Image 1: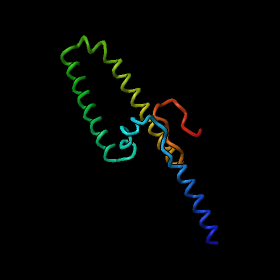
Image 2: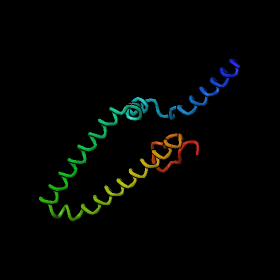
Image 3: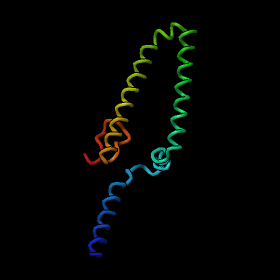
Length: 119
């Protein structure tokens, strides 16, 4: 029975290794984004910078609206459409990733629109 348990444990280790196999990427890219994928502190820092960028973006939009009405009239609708579509796409893509994680499926590819690996 001891040998049978060892074989079963070895088989389980192979399955776990298969589940945790990292996605294949260009070598330099894996160095750049490794922490972004695995380290919550890095993710927090990146999102903190993104919040700061969006706040600066908001300030820039208010300044353009107040100072350059003609420019605002030409670009504001396009800007709002692009930001809204991005927000919708990012939310849905994040929800898809969460749904796959709950099902213990491989993660989505880096580029939205490609089918997930293994599907």
